[in-house]
Length: 325
Image (cartoon, rainbow, N blue to C red; front, side, top):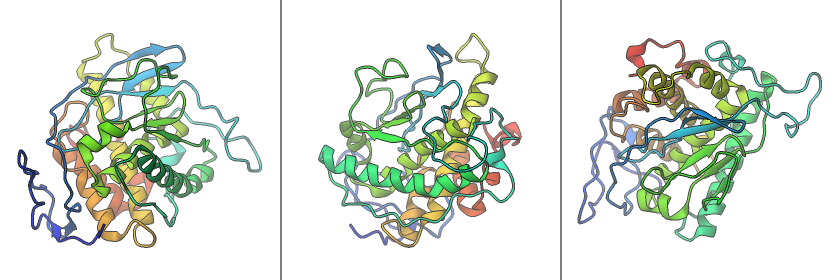
């Protein structure tokens, strides 16, 4: 597939018979996602859930970046296990349960460059698994230096294109509730084949944006940000305004982390600058959401990471409420 496309929001994709993609609200100059067949979006919402499942804290499920954002829960294990972390010298890597003061958000921290070598994207489950596996390997390669610099764990994340019968995060959502999610209990991104293809088709930009966002939650888990955020969610009412604000800060930061990766790797390899542009622009194709933020902020935080090129640009925790609404 040719990644070079007209500037966003230029010539629209050839519409499917039942649906025409919405135009991007972003400024001109960004590449549009490659024109591919995309199924009509489904307007789905799963509210943020809180509580404890064994040693798993339920927060906001990771949403795929699709035109109609899918909301839900994020699932993070209590306390990061550093036993399988990559080796090094000095003290063992340790997650720091802090938000704005997390070492990962300090000065001069950013993902490193990496050359992503991705296989051809196809509709078969083994093709998707290979594509996602290569992408997550590149995400890990890029993010590892940042986590190691602040001595935080670097556990390997895996990808599953099938739903588990049982997982560390309890019962899986249904297709009407999510298309992809991250489970911190087993450090796995679940991206079922049928669900992803139904919402993204063979749109490389959307698949990359989704996986980069999900891996952003893995970075939050490893750094201790996710568990620190869970500690702030104390309301017995899962729909409380306070808890939803915490979830929005989590999700908007994951967008920013996803875009940080994209700016670090854009150019060489399989992720060209135009494809990276299109993936970042895809973060702005979602509906307004009380758990993921307005369409404007979902895009603005992604752009903050893409332009800022450092984790400090992704400090959603210090931002005024009006910037994470």
